[in-house]
Amino acid sequence: MSVGIYIAGAAGQMAQHKLNDISHNLANVNTAGFMGSRSTFTTQLSNQITGNSTQAAPAFAKYGNQFIDMEEGSIKQTGNDLDFAIQGQGFFRVGLADGSEAYTRAGNFKLDANGTLLTQGGYSVLNTSGSAIQLQPGHITANQEGALFVNGNKVADLGLVKIRDASKIDKVGETLVKTPAANTEQASQDITVHQGALEGSNVNAILAMTELIDTMRSYQATMKVVEQFDQQSSLLSNKVGSIK
Image 1 (tube, helix red, strand yellow):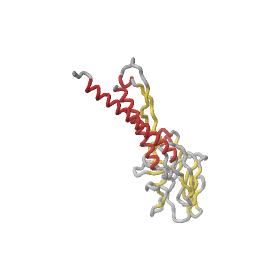
Image 2 (tube, rainbow, N blue to C red):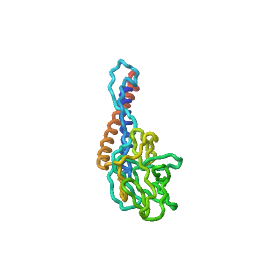
Image 3 (tube, helix red, strand yellow):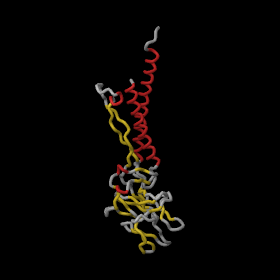
Image 4 (cartoon, one colour):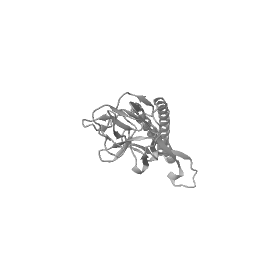
């Protein structure tokens, strides 16, 4: 009985984690550069719960961890000179307030009063040497390698990196991720920068809604099983050993 209710509860917990991921992804379906989150699940044998190695051991799914979907989103033209989209597996380098670096696919940048190129969250966009990019007033253009020009004069290069192992990425915001510096390398030549364009979210709203409905039904079904086990436990406690 205890094993059964534990397995049902674990299934409900697994569905709850999945619902959280899907709901968060759907909430950011229109966020530029957003990369969806998904959950992994592992297999556990029920005798690992009871400690009885001689007992039959049916397997059940258990929550593992969360990972980031690295699939590219679609690129849309905006016509804004400070919008940049990356085609290929690359990231813009971003400087955080504590001096560490983060990375993003969201290229909807802006300028502050001093001409510092910033993300929408107010973090400095970094060049290839890790310094904040400063732009003087004028007409801003960029080439496909990420070089920035003001009135035709080259002033900086966007810091672009490629992440080697996607399993070592952690989200630190809606569109920012962190990973050890050793897990990054300079962007390769197959990465292209498009000015006046933005990469959209990589979340497919229709598929996510379908998955949300399916997961919700699974969650409700597991909760009914838990409720049935609870009712059976109550009957055993009240009836077994009672004298009429």
